[in-house]
Image (cartoon, rainbow, N blue to C red; front, side, top):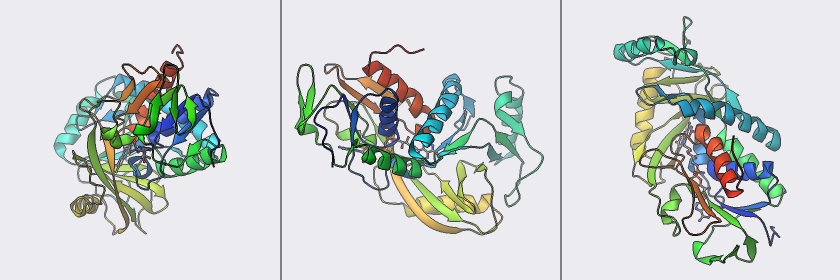
Amino acid sequence: MVSIKKVNTVIVGQGIAGSLLAFMLHRKKIPFLLIDPSVPQTASQIAAGMFTPLSGKRKTIHPLSLQQIPFAINIYKEISKLIGYNILHLTNIYQLFDSVEEQSQLQRKYLEPSFAPYIKSISNYLSGTNIYCGAYEVTHSGWVNCEYWMKFFKIWLKKNGRLLEAKFVHQNLQIKEDRMEYNGIEFENIFFCEGYKAINNPFFNEIIIPCKGDVLTIASEHFTTDQIVKKNGIYLVPIESYSFKAGATYQWNNDSETPDQAAKLLIEGQLKNMLTNPFEIINHQSAIRPTTQNREVIARQHQHHKGMYMFNGLGTKGVLQGPWWADRIVALSLQLDLE
Ligand SMILES: Cc1cc2nc3c(=O)[nH]c(=O)nc-3n(C[C@H](O)[C@H](O)[C@H](O)COP(=O)(O)OP(=O)(O)OC[C@H]3O[C@@H](n4cnc5c(N)ncnc54)[C@H](O)[C@@H]3O)c2cc1C
């Protein structure tokens, strides 16, 4: 039971965005309350949680990503300590070439000094994978166990009386000159972190493009590795020995939450092409990513209500860019200077 009547900040939504904001506020000892209905299978609960400096088909490296990676790693270490469970796994990505063109594209990249620290050629191939054109490794990468992060962070929130398990009803928010009120709770700041459901938020007109993603959990008795393996846009993330998350698909402007049979067949087909051994599909999940037109994160203060913010649009890279932006928007709300 939550008995809070007055708090500095209310956060709406406990996905990656809301959880990171809550953690940043906790770090700064700012009292907050998080409101979330505990719906299963949100994007944050099923995400594979990967992060890497290389982006997209063209394999570009954005300078901001290089600043965000070490920042995110420190935050995930701190969160692991707080919840008593290690969510951070630092590992290179074992990337199989899909074609000779991809191979020569990367060979050119090797010559660029800005790329050299992030890619590594390999001579020992991973047994159990189909090597048609060779492989390379991407360094400074890893994955965060989002399922357990969301689960254990919720337990921590509950234990500390910081979670109200309910859907936030926007119509019940009363905005006064110097504070806000919601169902008897008084506060100065509110952060909306509703993922793709922000399309229904009446206070902000941000354009959120829902992007459905399907992901499988597979088990293979004959294949094990602690590296992430990628080929042709499909990845395998080792969640346990002999068990992996495999995905994901991207269906833009699709907000159906039902797992998609065609997506399952697509991932399954790519896996057969990637692995030499048989595997069993033990789970199939789907959820909706909140993406934006120019892949820009929404970390914004409301035009008129100065205590009101939106943190959203983490898109396909919530794990990598979330901590950095959460730190910035919290600093903005507390009027702190950033380095
Ligand atoms: C299949 C798949 C694989 C992915 N893999 C990766 C990956 O490898 N690496 C990576 O970085 N990212 C990945 N992502 C993307 C990542 O999941 C998203 O960037 C991230 O989860 C977005 O977090 P969020 O908190 O904004 O949204 P969400 O996870 O959608 O969370 C929003 C929360 O708000 C709550 N909410 C909504 N409305 C209300 C309301 N009215 N009242 C109270 N609560 C409300 C919801 O119930 C939910 O708990 C993947 C996504 C998918 C679908």
